[in-house]
Image (cartoon, rainbow, N blue to C red; front, side):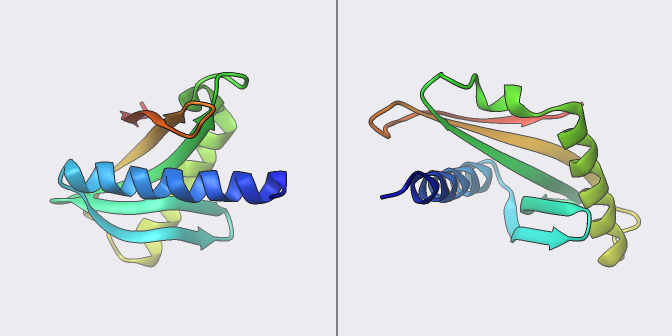
Length: 121
């Protein structure tokens, strides 16, 4: 299996684990991989009146730091722009929104180490 295929498989597994954790916390998964000209939301979810725009970061091993450390100010700004675009396109003017990162870490053998939902300030 090529490195890019392994990375895609790891990313898909991370997104599925993230969706499971969000559901466990009471979120309804509304969309997966929602794209627009400014970027993509890995998951769009809702819990009550709050809409969550979720970036899933999956890492295997510690060579590149923790998943949440990979969220740069530029990535956060892009997430905000995607959320605003979604709200505009779907007429959700009165909705409350939040930006979430779901950090998924696995060991080198692919065993799950943690799934953590973090709200961006």
